[in-house]
Amino acid sequence: MRAYAYCERIGDHLWDEPWNAVTNGAFLIAAFAAFLLWRRAGGRDRPALILIGLVFAIGIGSFLFHTMPQPWTLAADVVPIQLFAFSYFGLALARFVGLGWVATGLGTVAFVAFALSLSGLLAPALPQELRGSAGYGAFLLGLAGVAALLWQRPDQAATARLIALAGVVFALSLTFRTLDRPLCDVVPLGTHWLWHLLNATVLYLLLRAAILQGPVQPDAGSRR
Image (cartoon, rainbow, N blue to C red):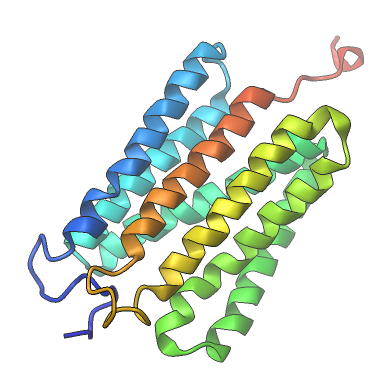
């Protein structure tokens, strides 16, 4: 039986995806580890705290979807991921690149449009079983672009390394997500659970970069 969305699921019962369900705990661990780092950094970085909350929500939503695949649990799985990805891109433009808020907003809107357009172009060109990964192509390109840009700035070398490492791990993670169905006859357990473990690592690396960089400080000259 391979009519289900993921290789591991072969029935309609709650625990018919045990590995895909349990490995969502990695997102909760990533969120908790990032929260401890956030506290050590002073505990005043609200944008980072919101992102930590989204990572926690990703773990809960994905767990619900892999135990009770329904339209509402699909939304609970997908929406926090999208919110984190686009919010983090905006934060990266402001916090890492140093853009103003107007440029950050316009850049984020442009990235959302690019991501939707790229997904729309890629998905029809891919076999049905691979189309689920098409929507993540823009995120991989976004990580690569931010890392390459920061690499040119000596004062951003540490952040560039974290973003670049996150991009490499995400590329590997996306590979395992894509191969879940094609390798199903060879690997009956599937490979989607590796997507969870590696993506939790990616999210922690991104949170670490944001927290260690710290929030954008207003220019002293702008204070009254």
